[in-house]
Length: 381
Image 1 (spheres, rainbow, N blue to C red):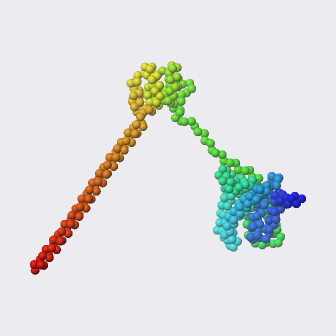
Image 2 (cartoon, one colour):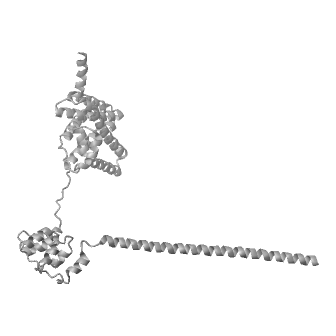
Image 3 (tube, one colour):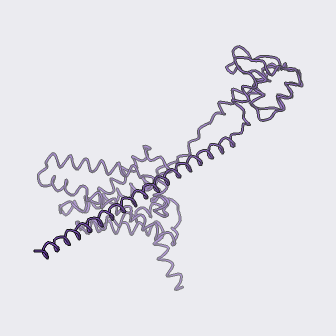
């Protein structure tokens, strides 16, 4: 019995009825106005959201997630009320004092920016209200949703209306005894309906990754042979594409190795020229074995010229090595010349030092001679 009596209030608090009672109690406190109304209206929003969610699901909320969801809801509503309150505090104060046009425009601008900001983040509001969960995960998931749907404008309108009612109940001066309770009741009904509308919105669909159909290799069209192509045309297509086995099969099937490329073909290289530049020499051997003149020129190109100019199996590495060796030798020669110049400069410096030392010694000798001659003259006198 004691455990059952303890569970009863807890289950009632987690149910839609219990959460609705909490929300209505907090709404009633907004009748006092001022900071009490602001705090009570702010705390009522998580209670309304959880009550609507419990009523929608038809089951009490899980006790483990109730606290986390309540804190997440309190966080987003606190941020919204605080930002909106700070943004419109000065314009509203100016409107109440003098009603200047600048204050009205400033109020409109702040309200518009606030609505756009909520519109931009409406998937977060919808997810926190409807499903709950970690606020950070919903924030990261914003990038995966299309936030500029018109449903976002409806969500932004609901949030803006809730925040406006909280600020109005906190800022309006005391009114008649019969009007204040009416405002409180109207705010409570409006809050409940706005939370219902916000949670009934269709969830935003995630933006799928844009798939771009990639065409095949455009260069493949130069070498692919049509399905009904003549054997000679298919042979040239296989040779241009480097498909040696296909070319050999076509030759065995009777393709003419002496045929020249078509006049409308962009690539005018003959079959021996094409075979000469392939790394697989079987096609070239097959062409030579069937009596093709390897010295014959077509379109100014012979197989030997093509092999020396365009060969796929040329000794590029050897040439690179030779170039590198030449650069090393050139670098060594430059280093030797630099060292020689440095040694020559050092020798010149040594000669200059010796010359200066000799000049100093010579100057000292002259001074000593002059002093000695002066002494001799003084002695003779």
